[in-house]
Image 1 (cartoon, rainbow, N blue to C red):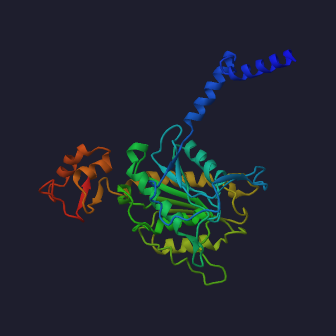
Image 2 (tube, rainbow, N blue to C red):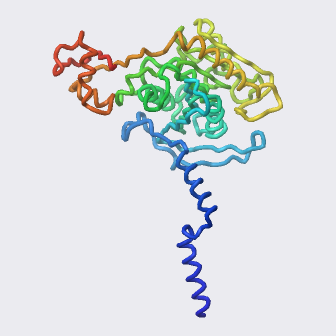
Length: 378
């Protein structure tokens, strides 16, 4: 009896002191694992507390599940019940191209294919010297109209691009080279943000919402929600294509059983009619939701096509046509002071003089600023 009690005490003590009694090589492995964990990109909430617009309750807490169905021999990780949208920033590996791409996973606005059309895409992008930003947008959300669109997802996309431009220096990105890529429902988000950027769907939250939320370029793979079956061959009327819609890359399989290839075709025609630079690739076979995982068809070569398109775009169009001016602008709200505006933009109230000097033609007295005044933020 005494021996068994003694053995139990020894086991407990060994568990308590186990970390301190690890062999040297195990200690080093443990430290290396902790280092890797600490270096993992962190999720950043895109909305300040209590400011999420059109907030709806989800069926339950956010969670992940693994699919039984396999794609290229691997299951997929699905995220359900996202009520707190976040971005995760992945810095580029090797030589930085200066490009940033926001990734919109698909999932029919019901869930998110977070690895297949999210993290795996980010890993590919950063390996090419591109900063990747994974947007975990709200799902499931209330879909509206016959095209089953999502206002909440578009709000999250608008907020994200403005936030990235506002914090470009902090995140070490070029505010004039921010693009988007999306798959399925995420492909629809690409078209939606490319054509609905002049006005936010929500009331301004902070200074980040003064930034343009227009992408500088757009990539949509097997998009949905752009064409309605059994109707005339017309584009979703909520997609307002103009000559200012960003250059776009489209890819679709003609045998897609989920989102008909007509979704890409009607968008392509609208882009061409508006003189928007657009490149489209159609393949006879490929199905739906293949992303980067290999298939037995030529469609799996699409990443090389995107890489060449981006290289060409980076050399020409993006240098000649920045989407936003080097200066930021701020519309003065009621009760705002230069100190308050300085605090919002620079994190300190002490740079009010810098703003005042940059607006010397407009402002005569730093203590008197009319509501509605458009200020240059240098």
